[in-house]
Amino acid sequence: MTSFTSADGHGAVPTSGVPVDEGSVPHRSQAPLWEVFVRSKRGLSHTHVGSLRAPDAVMALRNARDVYTRRQEGVSLWVVPSTEIVASSPDEKDAFFDPAGDKPYRHPTFYDVPEGLTHL
Amino acid sequence: MSEQLQAEFQAAFQAEVDADGRIEPRDWMPDGYRRTLVRQIAQHAHSEIIGMQPEGNWITRAPSLRRKCILVAKVQDEAGHGLYLYSAAETLGADRDELLDLLHTGRQKYSTIFNYPTTSWADVAAIGWLVDGAAIMNQVPLTRCSYGPYARAMTRVCKEESFHQRQGFEAMTVLANGTPAQRQMAQDALDRWWWPSLMMFGPSDGDSPNSAQSMAWGIKRFSNDELRQRFVDATVPQAEHLGLTVPDPELRLDPETGSYAFGEIDWTEFYAVMKGDGPCNRDRVRNRVAAHEDGAWVREAAAAYADKQARRAAA
Ligand SMILES: [Fe+2]
Ligand SMILES: [Fe+2]
Image (cartoon, rainbow over the protein chains, first blue to last red):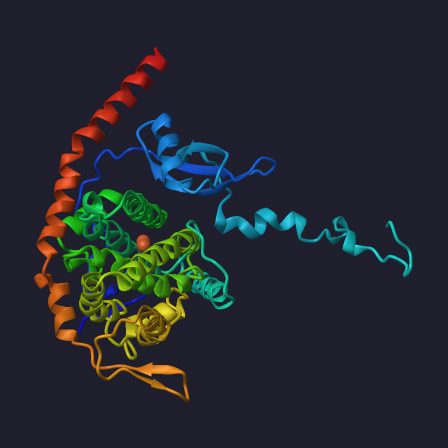
């Protein structure tokens, strides 16, 4: 018996008997992947919002405008080729971020402030 | 990977999920989790882009410029939803071309609701009100899904869906308060879209092992029946407000629970439409394949132009 899930958003779809990436299609030369960053208003940083495919930077910017800022969500856009992003490895996350773990004295909450005193 | 290491990763993964944390693309995850998500996100994406067709059918015939602008914006949003979702599937290592191929060859599915025809303008109103309304019920819990990119895509989608539902309800209100002929159109659309909308939540999944697993993985939060009940409880008062009759003689408000009891759903129709025997299955897939093939020269030209510019820049 096929199972269905409503949790696919626009209407139930089968959760069994459906193939998933079996490598059946030889990977065609797809347009490169770009990561999109939006500055929502002046004074704020650009924030990652998602990705898209486009053949070149100009089209990536235009597509990003149409896909991610249809409701004035941004005043500035960055697109960065996904392959250019250098990331820390999630497997090493403990070791990598460990050096900060035993230094609570870097936080103001580490220190006792005598009661009644302000501006400290 | 040693068995012990595998068990450690598995435990860390499940602990993150159980603590209502988020799994991100490069984290270790069980293969079944990845495959379940690719299957779900891909078919969700397919529903979004196929869903452009029934409404797109009315863009040239929208009754006013205002309605036309709204409808174009709504259909464009659905294309955007598809793009957010294919991007989310790619973060799991899926190949976008392959996903499209699985859709075009009928091996992956999309929601049965889009295999029904839009025979009058009132159907466009009914789709926004009922179909997008049902989509909101399904998608809001997904904003808390354990897979980060899917949850974030759903947050964007849900903001846009509420515009979809409201514009549909507004268009329905105009018809319901219009001439007797317009009222009749509105009632006729409700009569045809009500039951397929309830089917959007899928058959009861109470004892489906896949659903239980999806819940343990934090992908699914509520059963199909729970979501359907919420939809009925939310929508019946809206129909009453419109002065329209929900086509279910067994519909009753239970004064104790505040919930509506409703009649039996004809699941044979659902399975038939899923298998390919709905009124529009062949058209929908044929149009999709044609759009993809007719657009091939544009993709090729854009790629050739990008190559040429890159060569010039290098020279
Ligand atoms: Fe959508
Ligand atoms: Fe929608």
